[in-house]
Amino acid sequence: MTQDTHVTGGSGMPSRRRFDRRTVLRGAALGAASPLLPATAATASAGGGDRGRGGPGAGSVSFRWLGTAGWRIDVGERTVLFDPYLSRFPTGLFDGAFDPRTPLLSRPTAVDPHIGRAELVLVSHSHWDHLADVPHIAQATGARVVGTETTYHLLVALGVDAGQISVVKGGEVLDFGGITVEVVPSLHSRNKKCSYLAPGTLNSPPATPPSTIGDLPEGDTLAFQVTAGTAGPSAFLMGASDFSERAVQGLRPDLAMIAVPAGTATHRYVPRLLGALDHPRVAVPVHWDNFEVPYGGSPERDPAMDLDAFVAEVQRVSPATRVVVPDYGTVYDGDLRPRNSATPSTPSTPR
Image 1 (cartoon, rainbow, N blue to C red):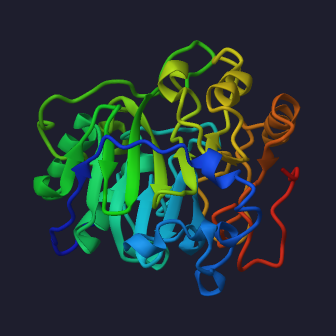
Image 2: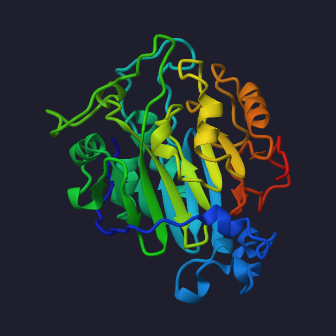
């Protein structure tokens, strides 16, 4: 694992506040006002979020898909990363020759152009396609990392300062000074035999620092809901295609970044998830791309994922939900509409 000069920093405080953001955003006073506009065009109106109280306005929020399950969320000049994996090295996973002895790598030249000045990194679980680049990012930026106890032990073994890592279990509501992070207990996807890939947890440091992808157990799985300011938007972020139905009920996100399943092991995955989330305004399929080819250009589909069938099922069970299939390199606004791309994100259904 490539190591960079160590930097420390970042902090967070828990909060008990919960906001019904979709009720606010759906209010007639908002319409298509400033939550949907770039920061330069936002005006002081009902859609201005908490601009007058020193926090970020909803119009200043942008989203970039980093491929796999990863996201970069910019709230004004502040950057939050979720499951950032950009090194994308081959393991044989996509050609039938998966090798758990594949060396664990991080390629700063592939990572650094896409992460901004991250101050917060959220990690859903500890498999390589979610964790491999986190040590480099944490050391290079000083960002605070939020993840499970397993993630904590692995990162410390890989050289990250323990003081940068916040261990969570699910259920926490963390206030990072205008960016609220709700931690949601979740589940990893399962194969046709209803089994997990590389299961296991760590309750103490590993005997030796991880050097291969097989050294990274799942370590339990989390989802996160990130909200900019008090008026949103709120984004529900998944790192794997399963969930705890009872844990997500009541979240009611504006945007749902949903991992596409590779099979049918999870009973009625899409209807149950969208129902529990109360049919979000926008659904964004993720984790359907081939993450062993370099990041850039147009995504190459994972042949095991039926993206078209997933989109069709979302539209069938939640016809009022707009589906946005993301692309690499596109900057999306707070309603997941492209800001900088001439190619529209399709398919979509107006809401």
